[in-house]
Length: 256
Ligand SMILES: NC(=O)c1ccc[n+]([C@@H]2O[C@H](COP(=O)([O-])OP(=O)(O)OC[C@H]3O[C@@H](n4cnc5c(N)ncnc54)[C@H](O)[C@@H]3O)[C@@H](O)[C@H]2O)c1
Image 1: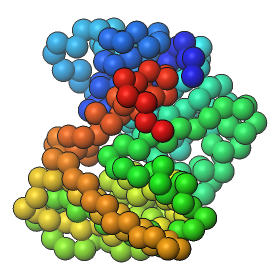
Image 2: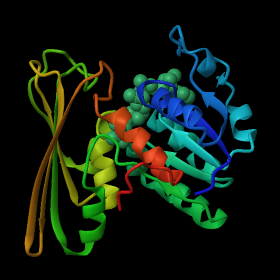
Image 3: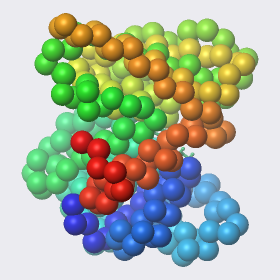
């Protein structure tokens, strides 16, 4: 797409990687990088600092044709429909869509305005396969294993913390199961996708096992990434940069 002006929401691990690729490759003008009050910009990111704002109204008023959210599911809940009423929205915090009222509002806003909600593959692979095979897929089980700190719970937690629908998993772990949400959206939905969340105090990896059972096919995909300390693993900023390049139609290797 030929986007001219973008807004970025969030300047953490993913948001900074996105800002850097857009600026260094001259993909578009960045109107703003919206953060919350708690954000402290690290030293040595002067160019990023110049774009930072905590003013939501300023962000909403900016003449952007694409907003990239890499902040928190609450942002999609509060601003998703309003942003889609004026331009496209790429949402990394896809767990927000597990709330039926949020999904309905954003889908309605996009349909009314003729805009697009883009869901990047983020930490996981195979969204294309899920989407293509959706009609023939009977069961999807996603098992995520992280340490308690990465799950926002007790560091000594061990064992299965959750097993149920992806819709319920998103309500319980909104910042930790975006992978499950993206797979549910691409595939057979939040209610039919099964989520399992496991705590392992000894691991520094974020592991996702995706088991898919369809009519005449089965997949068992495992991806793993070392934690960067927060909710993202080492692969996610790379994947975010690739997704942004593809959205702008600029990628050294065209994947389809
Ligand atoms: N789709 C995926 O596979 C995937 C993978 C990893 C992370 N995520 C999600 O992407 C988001 C960003 O991840 P990250 O690792 O960059 O997080 P991070 O904690 O490193 O950074 C979050 C940033 O968002 C800002 N922020 C938080 N709440 C905000 C609000 N209400 N308004 C404006 N700014 C706000 C913070 O100031 C910070 O700059 C998170 O929601 C995370 O759960 C998705």
